[in-house]
Length: 196
Image (cartoon, rainbow, N blue to C red; front, side):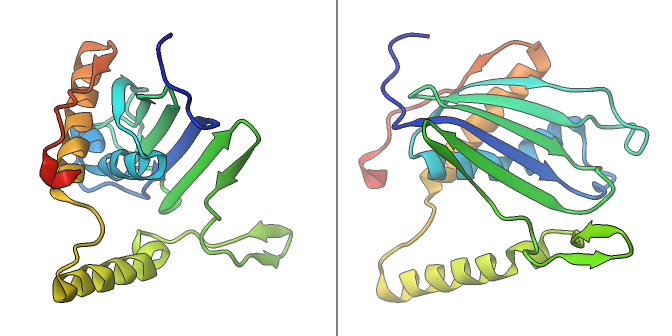
């Protein structure tokens, strides 16, 4: 595609979002609208630009969750960076979130969680937590402390309503792409001055 601005050396962002077992109420649509929403938000934050299009492909439902499908989402940003997101809410082995940013001259990736490994009886690895709490406990605490400090000092920090709104517009495009099997454009309205 032509006409895109230079991506500052960023090429791909690979994301993985896996849960051990999804709740009974989780549908294929909610895999996109609920689980993948975290990635939609962080992609905008990490890359500092808007997502412009979405494609969604779904493998068949698995035997462990016959009523919902895993999702593979392909996004593209204003500058042309390509993002792939695997969302598999019934991976059985535990909670696993990964990300790797591929740039022109190298990569940067999240460390596995936890960073300590166990070697015993012919195995080399680490325990995988059952849910998000062990991995993100400290991050949530730091976020809440910063949010509270922002209220007390009247200097808002972190995400704004605009960020949530844009994540919902990406979700809307992904659901359209999933239903139609085609690429869907993300509606990008003009940003109000309050959020500039």
